[in-house]
Length: 313
Image (cartoon, rainbow, N blue to C red):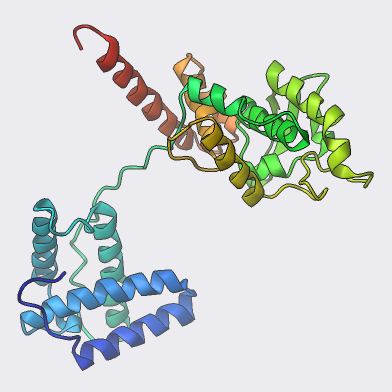
């Protein structure tokens, strides 16, 4: 956090104790390089701020932490420090808690100045989804060559059945029962579920199996359902690249993720009155609270539609 009166450089004592703490995190907990860098950045910034108050990082009090948070929040409200949102605050406080508990454990101080500080409440980010018309354009974007038939089958199946990307690219032919219109999946935690495919997905998978897969397989024996142009199993990365390609062709500008069609599947079901527990079963969620986030997406969209179309909204 810079000001016109720049804080002093990190004091040698602060730099030394900070490095010892980070080395301990790496050795004992195996924290990733990015996490260690974030901890270093947050704590070094706080240490420099403390330096302006003639306080060492290891000796900071609860009041110092509160004053620092207040100063950062004040700058954020004036739009001069847009990097200190609720998630940044939570990350900073997490770094401080681990740092001062480390000092306690090492008997380098007798109290924890973070003990009474509350973490900010973090709302769960709503998943990105698509409207029904955007999905329709996306599903019709692939061409009718071998790769296009494969992509249409993958997109239709993902949207019709709410598959995870890993489940989609990991499908083997015996898992798909076209006669009964169901696909057998093994999701997270080894939980198995049967999910209906829908008529459009059945038709597209049949077209792919008849008109494209033999060409992609080139005579090789394999029971993977979806194959790359080299006859190998599709990967998550390959599917993601193809999805972005078709989104551009369909003029879908909404930010996408590999799970966008899975999110659309859940949202559209709830918008049309599906029971939440049914959607939970179809998605393969172990906990209903994971599925409940889609009710917020559906409500947000209904409110937007009401505001846009109701004469007294």
